[in-house]
Amino acid sequence: MDKKIKNYLGISAIVAMVIAAVSTLVFANIYSKSIQPSSYRSFSVSAEDKATAVPDVAQFSFSVISQGGKDIATLQKENSEKTNRAIGVAKASGVEDKDIKTAVYNVEPRYQFFTCPNGRNNKTAEPCPPPEIVGYTVTQSVSVKVRNFEKTSEILSGIIQSGVNSVSQLSFTIDDPAVLENQARGGAIAKAIAKAESMAEAGNFKLGRLLSISEGGFIPRFGFEKAAFGMGGDTDSNPPQIEPGSQEITVNVVLTYEIR
Image (cartoon, rainbow, N blue to C red; front, side):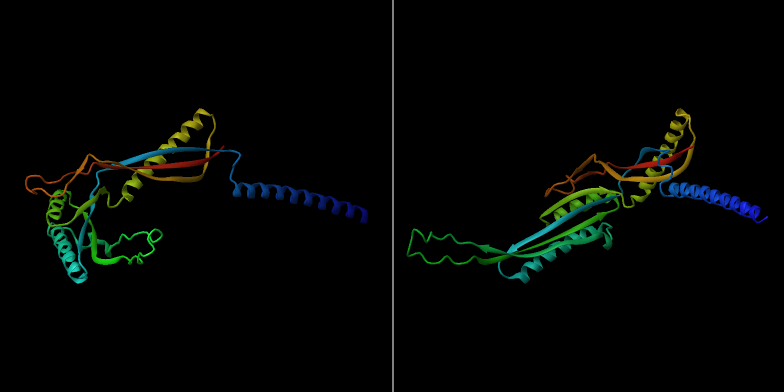
């Protein structure tokens, strides 16, 4: 009797060990897939899409450079008056305070350098005096955003005629590019899904879970038609000609699927 019980116990222990071993293998398989889900049974597809819109913001910078003697206060006053006059032109045309920003303000000395004879060839030569400050240069640069394109030409003309030294870095952009990015992203994902379904049909297999999705980033492209402006001239007879063109944003996505 004791021997039979021992046999039953031995068989039960063997069965339990087999069940435990099978469970361990199943768990290991599931755990492995959770770490690297079907990496040996998966495929990836990529697609891109683009969205295009006309820029709604024009940006440019203007600078006022004032050079003079050692009276820094006078130079600063002169520079500020010209700069404020140009800023006033922009504000009078509807540019808000938040869209006007002082980008650079520099006060730098101007030096006079002396040419002295070489002391090696002239033993009586006196030491050369150090450079001497003869005046100062005050530079102020302001960046401006124009949201009403109908006013861009008028604002540029007015600022140029107000007495600034230069107008530069004219560019066009979209104030909220996230709208374009979302539009391009949605199109790229839809194309990638259609591509994956087509590949599964051609390869005679079924799509499993979507394992991962990655984005390759945004690629902005600009198509400017015309952006011309110049210094001086009559603002009524020869205003700057402004054409913003278009801006295009491309988004790339990569989808990885499980193969069933």
